[in-house]
Image 1 (cartoon, rainbow, N blue to C red):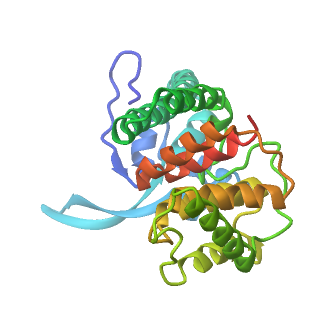
Image 2: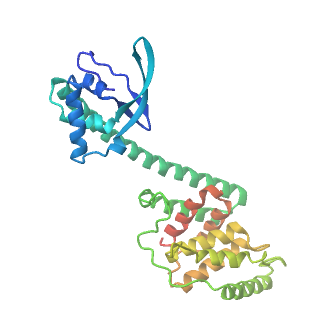
Image 3: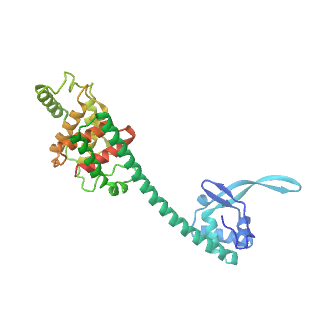
Length: 317
């Protein structure tokens, strides 16, 4: 709040709609000028199109004493934008004091605002780090991972730490792809996916690693997932890059359980099938893919964006 050097000016202000409002009379008192001078500066601010009347002025009821009785009348008020504009236009000692105060205060707020935003970015990164470490601990505990797979999980977390800077640059929608992501060129065909799953089931059954329920579809859930990957919004693909499609494919199959049994293994299979179809070099080792799939399975729904970014960024590691 502005206060004149000697503390002789204090102005009651109205705070509404995230700003402050003063009448012309209050501005005249604030800047020690006649009201007619304030009126002229306000008119000039509008005539020069510095400010818009609709955005900077409003009528508020004000109670006044008239003839021994209280009367409520609508009085023009002006918001902080106009107050500052008049403060920089008026020629008076008080106006000069106000400009010095306003300039310093605005500078302080700009610096403080930058610091605050910087801190928020840092906190966002720390929050995601906590989510990731919590997920790591829960996965290790719930899955009773052997040392080899546990080491793979730790490797993933270590690799993901390298992506903090990139993730902090993401837009608010948190779906921006890595810089080297490429546009998707194809869709995973349901019949091709179904044939691959059948072959996979037979191979596992031969080894005694698949139950009779393995790969049994739950309605048309898989078709729905593959259809969702091809969704459009305003004529544009919802998932534009091949990396984004691959990440969502793995996530949806693991989390939505389109099969009675084997969702994690089938999700990994379809993930690799789509990578091969799109010509994406497979860089994740089998143990790392196993660990990544378990992380997805153990993740909370609120961590979905985090997991999608994790998958996308680690595909290039």
